Image (cartoon, rainbow, N blue to C red):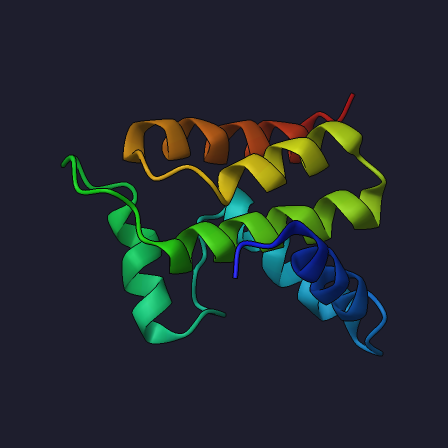
Length: 113
């Protein structure tokens, strides 16, 4: 599933929905408030587990959820740096690195340059 062209197409189609403002707001909350409530319960648990202090690798579901959410925000704001970061998030299985990437997305949302 981690095919960049398929993921790009999915995100582009999400940006063309009628209520994309709600979707964008949910994605922003995911990063800014660590609000995972709009995700499926199983993905919510996996997203919360990213911030646990253990060395268990991160599975594909939360990486895709975070990466696609960041990609959606990047495309909406035309932020190339965030888009690059979003595509990398989907490939990070190490918790510490993913936590840093999550914080980098948050920083981009607060201070896009």
